[in-house]
Amino acid sequence: MPQKKTKDENILIIDSKTMFLKRALEKLLSEKDIKKSQYQQLKRACETALTSITKDIQTSRISESSILPSTDQQSINAEKYFLPFELACTSNHPRMVDTSLDCLQKLLLHGHLLGSIADPIDPSKLLIDRIVSTICMCFRGVQTEEQVELQIIKALLTIMTSQVIEIHQRSVLQIIKTCFNIYLTSRSKINEATAQGSLSQMLNG
Image (cartoon, rainbow, N blue to C red):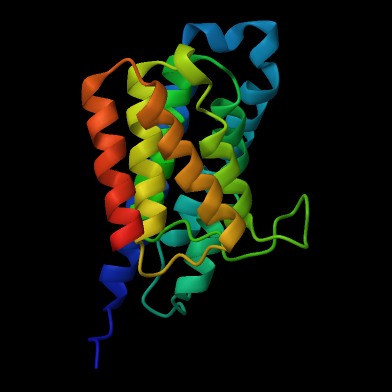
């Protein structure tokens, strides 16, 4: 039977996650181009999320008599901050896309972002389906930055090999198609080999 986490351990998990989110959002806001008019929606989403995270950090400093939040509550707290990273992924700004993908991959890897709730935009789907689509759309063919390609592969491999993330067949096919397209079109031999190895791991794992 897995050992139950102590109160201090749970507080550490919550604070670590929220601080990671906070730093990622601050990194996006530090981009000088975010002040341009085409990124105003992203800028506002980051600022709104940071305000909310500040409140989360305050409430996560639980007193000795408080009831600890469940794992589900912790997951939902991470999922409600997906929008800024989605907007960054669709910004076509290489550094902001790279930062967003890196953050999403780490959240997925550590089980902070499961996407198991209904998608607020389309309740007939799960949020993970939207997350997969967002990551895959960062690949824009041969003009995709090499670092962005690598981050896409890492994030998609994390989803496919996760023991806690559940995805539908449509998302699985989208992931495989994206990795295969990177393998076919990447100008980087390293990314080509990484995509090939990731595909092998996905299909044979």
